[in-house]
Image (cartoon, rainbow, N blue to C red; front, top):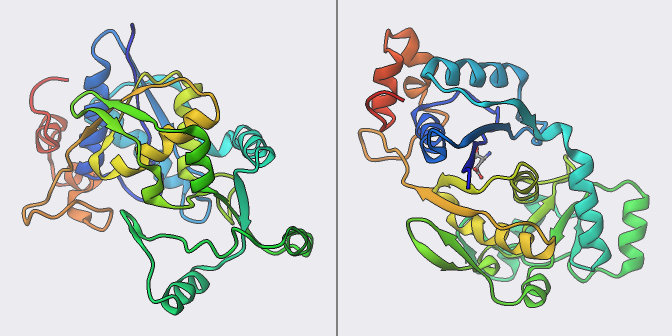
Length: 281
Ligand code: GLU
């Protein structure tokens, strides 16, 4: 089987060495016979910028990477996400959530805390059982809302699930750890979890490579694959590149951006070595 992998950055800043590690990892995982795709994850309209997308393409080419055209942009695929949301809605698995971040924090404080998920406290479920009438009226009045997965019900319907990581082996899916995740944001008709799952399936990705910080998210994607009858890829989670102080690289680390390294006279070979892939591509 021809391996199909992808690198899927969000154009919300300049690529740094951590991204280079991820991109090179995905390219290597495709192998010389496989296909390596590039996908721009730009549904977060408030934070994504076209100039960052241009910079991503430049930086990856400078690094020596080649990828299969066309480059997919999530902002062009919103009808696909919409169709999946309608299906899940028809099955009674998602619900509108009007809460603001502040309201969620206040609700959690009033309840004396909330179970902690890997990404922070879980959504307390405020809007899960709003009367249908109230929900309809608030939507009709134009009130902004997200769509959340009713996790307990979704997990119950899907039953026990596992997923396979090529390094870690067979993993038990534990999507409940993330609670009622957002599948459609207030400001965009989709979310990371929904879009990444649908696009990996649509693009025929056979091996999803990503940082190990996203292992909890993989369980949610596995659940969505089950709910939406999507083909099953395998996964390979990689360790995160750390800076000299042992901290995770972030977009704020300007010195580690590929653009800064290039300007400082670092060669593509040297940058690849710094990103954990010495030697020819
Ligand atoms: N857009 C995501 C990121 O930049 C992609 C992660 C993934 O591969 O699922 O973190």
